[in-house]
Length: 458
Image 1 (tube, rainbow, N blue to C red):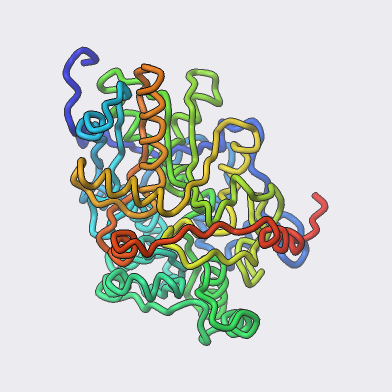
Image 2 (cartoon, rainbow, N blue to C red):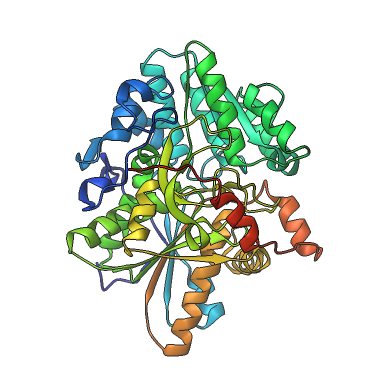
């Protein structure tokens, strides 16, 4: 098949869909550090975590030796509604750029939630239902995760309480209404509904919120309400496990046509999309079977990889969640009210942080106006209006393709198109009206939060 013309869209047959999720940690020589109890600063036990998370998800969170987890039949059945997702050859973009590079993108926006988040949402809702829970709580930034979880909870008949970062709640009212249509309650965060929300508002009057704030509120609500557990759309090991279906499908599609990727690019906020996309490729790299250049792209306004510290930190602003060792800007860091949406988290997945620390992948930060310039360019030639988060990967994919034009190298570039931007029109309006700005935190602002990092001797 390698000599055939590559189609615009590569679809897998139903029989080629992954039967199991891949646990990248099983192949990591240096495992991600353990989560720590915020009171004792000792590694969290399964019993302690089960008070916050579903029991089966706790097992997945702590397991760093089992390479594959079989996907339950009920989840595979749900996946078939929108998976496998297409791997698309960006022929039009290649022609427009006049680059010898071959560009592919894995499109995860072909479902009602509009993003890749549904891959983990349905899994977490399934395990909550199996445990006999009443409902779940969560946070959401741009709203993709909240939308996905509301869909998944509706499917299984679970209650869904969503704390949405205030700036996104105000900028994306239609995303909020999709969640409500699927039966979720949506509260702008920080709110007066929780103790931690009231505390944050007292300390930061008028704040536009952050994912760290919303996580704190969601966790408090789950712990205080019987029959509820907290679920998270990124960062955690279990989420990267579920999202591995993205990379597994991508690699199967490439292998089907004998295509070898040279560069793999993903946007990075907490790590769900990037970790899912790169998982089987990074696995090959770790096992010495192949080599790839892997690039994480983050917003310059929230640069946890490129300007953060690799240290133990709280996963939330309220400091009620476990501590994770990760690249972080400090749990008190509240990004500017930009349009990066789901990439506005102060830290990064422990798995990805360890891989980055071990120099197995690269990271780059990009400014907001440059991101939207790439988004508009892509939309005009490829016919998909990308989510602002996805456009971070598009920006660097274009940049790498232009480097190939300069050198004449015929590299194969694969990037993740995490979702569509049809609920992000306020952002596009700002860009089109010339009102979009690039805010980049100063060294002093970042250092102020570094100074507040917990002192952990592990």
